[in-house]
Image 1 (cartoon, each protein chain N blue to C red):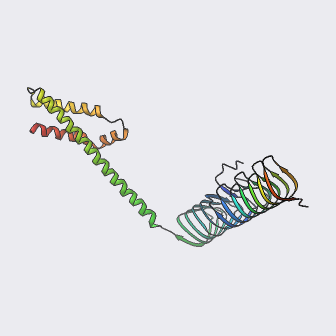
Image 2 (image 1 turned 120 degrees about the vertical axis):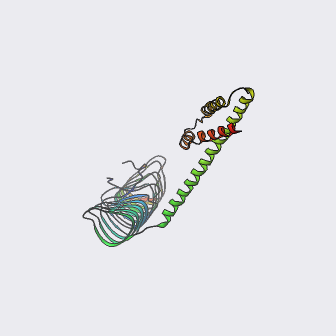
Image 3 (image 1 turned 180 degrees about the horizontal axis):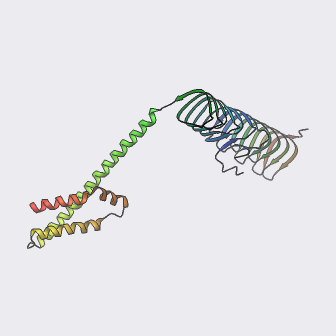
Length: 104
Length: 209
């Protein structure tokens, strides 16, 4: 049994997702709001909306508002919007546009 | 955790989703989902809860379900609890499954019709094939008869009986020569037995003439 929430490639989801304690992986297209402990946006993942999580890894395309403790933007990651993170790492090749600030 | 190759969406234990789900072919629900869903296969695990409409080929329910379900096959396991309305073509219930819902057998004549047409097509194809085999067998037999005639003209002193034997031999010799490499055709000929039959009749008519 898989122990994480997985929005697979090709899937289109719209709404509010509360991930609980388990990680959330988005490889498809998500529109809306995610509250979770740990969120990974895969290389082909698309996100529109608001994302609140403790640990976030972005390798896909993110549009909107991101609030988290630690953020890692992968080499294929693209961010457009506002980011609030206490700890931030951006890999070489990533595209980040918008405002960046601290969550606390 | 191979993320890219997985073909099954998962809503994990403890997760809660409310909204729309589109283009999910296979989805497994361990958490709580309030959504309308169209998919090939839906699995609601024992800890899962789904509220909303489901349209799917196969639904396996081990958890809670409430809503309008239209499914090809429904398997309600021992821990299933279903409320609302379910429409199904085939339904399996394990001992212990709780159904507090409207249950409708949804027989769709459309699919049966489609199957029948396919059968009819197959029959037509078979008939065509048989015709084709007939034609091939006949033409080969004719060719053989012609050859035989030439042989008869060249050697007029051969008596009828001998000629018949000869022609028979010739025909089979020709047949083995022209035996198609294609396995299907060979099987077809063998099955129909048309060639031998055709050759025999050709031989007889030749004898009379």
